[in-house]
Amino acid sequence: MNSPATVALPCVAGIGLRAPHYQEVLDTLPKLGWVEAHSENFFGGGAPLNTLLKAREHYAVSLHGVGMGLASPDQLSATHLDALKHLCDVVQPASVSEHLCWNTVGGKVFNDLLPFPHTFAALDHVVSRVAHVQEVLGRQLLVENLSSYLSFTSSEMSEGEFLAELVQRTGCGILFDVENLYVNVRNLGVDADEFIRAIPAHAVGEYHLAGFSVRDGCLVDTHDHPVHDDVWTLYEKVLHHIGPRPTLIEWDGDIPALSVLMAEANKAQQRMEACDECFA
Image 1 (cartoon, rainbow, N blue to C red):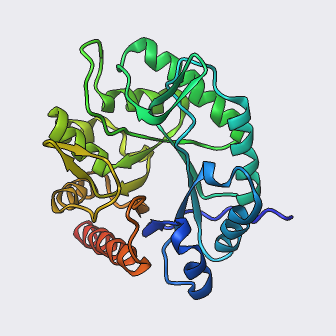
Image 2: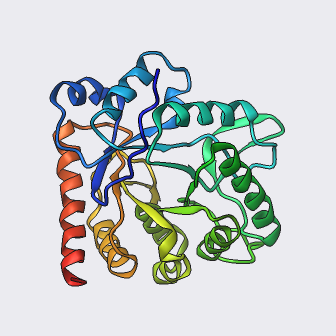
């Protein structure tokens, strides 16, 4: 099988390509800016990978991982990294991203994206792992800021400062999840303006937007609702500070009709175009 040539992500809005919409997307080829796929869903090859490659013939693709565990104390899984490398070689995605979290310890894997204290020791640890991943993949990795439900008194810097140092020392990029930042603002009292100022604008390669749930007064990053009005407002602030970037609508639970996702993407597109006009 010949690998397709790499196509850069267009600076427009896209959607997550999820299983309920595979056939409709391939049959109708709707006007989508680009699509994102969860890397691990395609490690096994077979029909899912064939579907992704068919979609890749019409759309730029971003691969988004949830299982690398960049901050985990265990060694990086060579099996996982090799599978991601093979997938990148076959798909030739426009970008590859991972969460800044941990999910394994002592060989046990947790099906979650867990936070960690932002210490200098943790920074050294993550720097070495991100550098290794980029070396194996032969490409830049985008690292995503995390939604969290607790903070650590042992942290020696903010998440934004941590990301800025990570970019400086590894040359990685940032996947700026605006909804994750909003969740942390509401749950933990994070200063959104401080976070936005801390991260290097030139390193931001993508934005994510999603919906959250509210449980016992806590915002939970569930990706199963439309983007909240307050998140749209924060997105507009981010656009005016950093500028437009490829923007993804994430919706992973209670997935609605494809038309609903496309309508959400159109809202993001309109805001990007309005931002462009402001700086024209």
